Image (cartoon, rainbow, N blue to C red; front, side):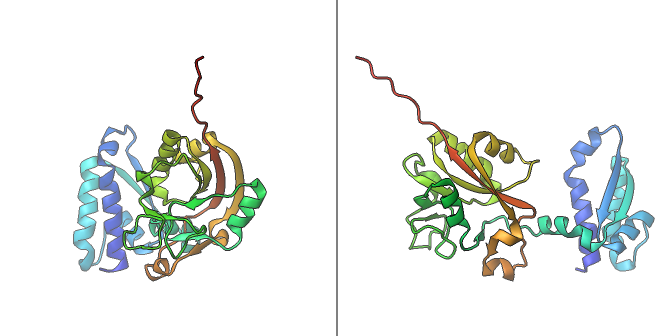
Length: 244
């Protein structure tokens, strides 16, 4: 499949994904931005080469059915870098802080984590670590969510999709630890992190402070775009009243 066909297919499925939302919109005008000049032209003019006819028909009939007004804009590749990073974003956590970063954080806060609970034997930053890889025999234990988090100081650099679950687990277990996460103001977990943390440290651009693993390079995956921060959480333990 050519890059033009892939782009038109992507646009079709993006529109299809929001079909129910689009049906409820009063002003059904949609702006499509793409760095693929051919796709932009084809959708604007509804004219394509024979090899792309079926692809463009899908978009055309969906737009007609949803009664959408389509405007297309070409984004130069340089300006498209953030979107491109998101489309090829590595969500599995196959990256880690560069050498010296965790030591700097610990010195700044005078805080030493005891276990890295989302790591592998290849990217662990602390001798004790947990992993979801059942084949990793070097790990302290598998699947951190199966254990209580309240008894140790944690280092947590989780995959982005489970950040909300991580924060829920920390609240549930009244845990404490360092959480490394992107600074993405539009995300719900970003607000929760700011509200729950007692200290914050700005670390910098992801490509300057994060190290990618070989598996990411092979798959041509990208680091999370934007800045990264360290958050120190210390959720209070419940007070126990002693009756005399």
